[in-house]
Image 1 (tube, helix red, strand yellow):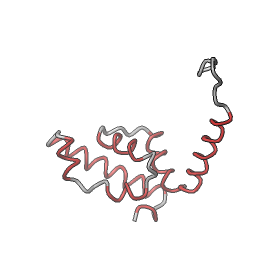
Image 2: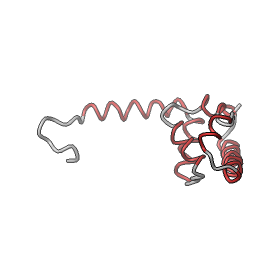
Image 3: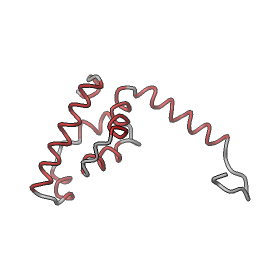
Length: 107
């Protein structure tokens, strides 16, 4: 199970998935057909937070292997409890910093 793996093992599994998806889409580039017929993402969907899953899918389908994206995906699985605490902190900070009528939103 993916949730039992450490960061290094997850990175290896993720890179294997990238390779497999890239190979399959190289032979048939119909992404809709691929998504309709694949079960490759099911285990990942179970362990990834809902907010990270679309980023994961887009990255894998487009073979985007930027270290920041890979690390974010891996960290969201390994450190799931702290990940949710960080989201709550950001949301509470955003509420404190809400804009008032007439203020520019980027100031």
